[in-house]
Structures are given as C-alpha cells and as structure tokens.
Amino acid sequence: MLTGHRENAEWALAMCPTEPFVLSGGKDKSVLLWSIQDSITSLGSTNWLITEDIPKLGARMAFKGHDANVRDVQFCPSSAQEFCSVGDDSCFIIWDARSDGPVKKLEKVHGAREIHCVDWNAQDTNLILTG
Image (cartoon, rainbow, N blue to C red; front, side, top):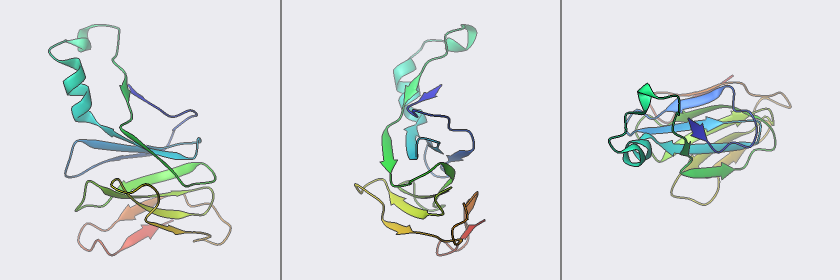
C-alpha cells in the first residue's frame, strides 16, 4: 500500500514508462513520488501475497505547489525525473525530481476553471495536453 498523502488521493496516478516509479496527487495539494524498487528491497524474500498484512511503502519525495486538489499527474515519456500536474486551482506545473520546487508553474491555464486531466505527447515531448 502506498502511503504519504494526508487526504484522499482518488484520481491522479501515473506510472513512469522508463523506471519503476509511481506518481500520485491528492486533496492534500501535493504530488508524491514512489519507487516500486523500494518495496522490493524492503520486502526481501517475504511472501506477503499470502498474508493479510499488506506492506506499506512510503513516498520517496513530496512536491508542494498547488493551492487545491491535484487532479492528474503524468511523467515525461523520456525522463523518469520530469513530470507534470494539474488541479482544481487551474494550475499546470512542470516538476523535476532533482529540483526543490516547480520548474514551471502556469496559473489560470483554463481561466478560473479547474483542470481535470493532463497527458504528455510520447512522440514530441514539447507537447502537453490539458483538459
């Protein structure tokens, strides 16, 4: 079980295409990054699939920059370190896991309306779609 959000994280979830990383966003206004590799290391040879105790995996990193619920997250198709997020605050944020804060934050991308989805073009990483 992935842990770390302080409130529900119901919709925003992405798997990295190049590394064993998972992103999520939630009502706590944060984006969290996990490494599935961390769970393999922490579990060792324990066969937890046959027990009722599901192991918990804490987030590797947390990113703060939204002022409202984070609705969607997406990895850059060519980089495990770069990703973006959108939310109810009408902000679009590009992140880099090697940086302390947002790389680029665009506010009121859809006017004052919330943004529900984002997708990064796999053929041209200069193109990102929001809706």
